Image 1 (tube, rainbow, N blue to C red):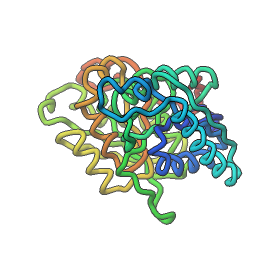
Image 2 (image 1 turned 60 degrees about the horizontal axis):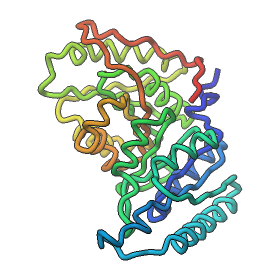
Image 3 (image 1 turned 180 degrees about the vertical axis):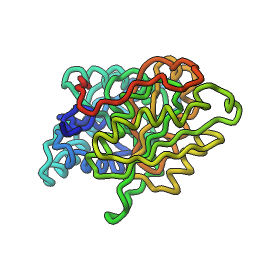
Length: 312
């Protein structure tokens, strides 16, 4: 069965959550993904309470709520029109109140199967992303989240198609690995599995069994006629991942296993934050499961089955 039947890689709908200042680099990514998947694009902007309650803090000049709302509608209407001219199905909506709450509710109401976010805000009214909003959404949603940072620059059309799947192997990566495999297959891209061994954990059972664990994961990829490259590096994970991105120039980066419990405590200063904020390409994350057991044989993962179903 072709992998692109899965909602993970063949979504019917893609949501672009924008603070409006990031539309110029979010829309090209959304357009490319919609063309590959045939998905409808939704554009959503949430006018946060700071717009009409910030006068006390004097951090920002007061902006009347209704004018801000109308200006946002005009900006999204213009963007939607441009997408429709490219023969893409697109709709937009502006909402009020807290972004996390409204984005989550919108995803539920419209059965959104993929979310695209920016990782920086250039607006005067403060950050929408990548701060507490993106952090909360990435750790709480059960759909793939594609983040796009300020370092992203589209590659020339003749650039080789590559996808990097970076995993610590410390949490079950099956779903995220399957996402990387399916994305690679859909793009006819070369897949690289990257594992970085942290210097202070070289004696850890998972790190010691990294190669057999990765080989076990690759069984599913081989069933789809993919022969991923394996790269095992030692050092500081964020630095090594970003270095590999600079060297390989991937079209997409997929980060393996981002469990909610750890993200809550470590996202802002941890590996995920640094990679997502500085990645030169769109980065997919997918919230996943429990921590692996530290067995010496390193074989705590089941093989990825390319034909299994997934509800998104």
